[in-house]
Length: 585
Image 1 (cartoon, rainbow, N blue to C red):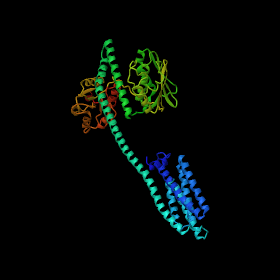
Image 2: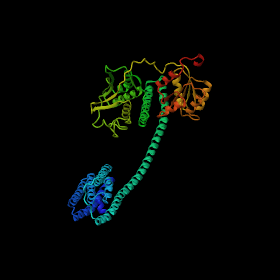
Image 3: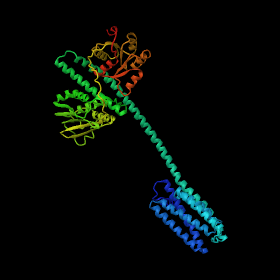
Image 4: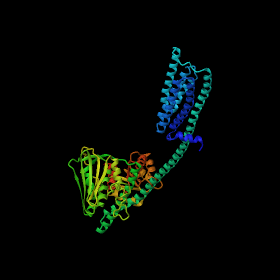
């Protein structure tokens, strides 16, 4: 290592990696060295000329400057070290200026450089203060000269001559040294900035590619889910529809049991598919809540009625209990609230071999619903795991209970979307309690809604656009049970033609069909007729599919497999209340 690098490493010791601090410390040491060289020369000169006070004062200033510089710099306080050095330089120059006879001395040029040195060694604030001190010194010496105050007689002309030869080149070299120190550090800073900038550009490029890949993966996942959802829901609609038709016909006990098993298996598959799609909606931020008046007691009793059969088959008692403070009507999302409670009850039944499952509804400032069971309970640490997607309390391959592990994760996310919390407490072998806490908005009682029994007789002509023969049979049977006249179109083009010929009262439109899809067919009809109700009946149930249907001009959106209650509600809403005899035939 060269002498220059050794000296630089010694000066930089303890300065850290901050380039500004390192530059200031280097300037401080450079000025400290010049102070020793130039100041020492003046001390020797003053002693030779008999200026004892000036020489001792200057020597003391030089010693204080060096002690302060090395002491505070090595202790990690270069700001104090620089302050001491800059004050020492100011005192040295002022002393030399007075000793040399005042303003006629070339030491005045040094006093002009002092604020610049202070700025470089400490900072802008100290540089401004030193500038003010230098200005005061100039004014004081100039005033003393013009007021006739006694000043030292000055140095001999020959000595001044040699000091001029010493001072002016030294000033130039000092400025050059400061610039060199500055340039050396800042060149490295700029080089590092350029290197860091290149690294950032590369990192941004890598992250951008990763982001594009993630978006592409998300798009591919959404497309895959959309395709699989459509392809599963279409035959599932046929399975559930046909079993529903069979259950409405005379069957032997064995046939009814077998058909019911098929229906239950189909419903389980539909529930699984809905869980996957719900999780996808929540994960992508496309979940929309529909807040409306809810009959809380009826909703909870409906959940109990839905799961009463499975509970009874396991020998469990399933009951609901209401606190006296519970209001009849609240504001909530009935679909999501029913989904959360149904999932919690289903989970409780699954993990309770014997005993009971209780829904306890409590009121107050907030709505609190406990779902308590006397089941197997949870092991220590399982509470934090069960709300994670695709996780269960038992993740081993020998687990006794099935499921995707999505149900509780969806429940918690739905609860959070409703500005609530879902927590769990459990004792292994004694049972588990899930506590749902939601905002409570009490509403005035709402008039009872009309019964939507699927056998309710209706009147009108319904045009169904459906390309799948099984689904054609299912929807025809469901509509004819209401006493409706049913027309079947096999594709969108056929649908437009039949609409022109028969002018039906309602169109149930599949979206994906050969020849012409349902969106295009709807736009063709809407270009002529803006009034005929058109409802999408489709296996497209991904986020955004409903919006596509509405944008095409449809009035509503039904997802396959078709729920009986939903279909009945649509028919009651959109079919005319009374029809002429000729049209209802």
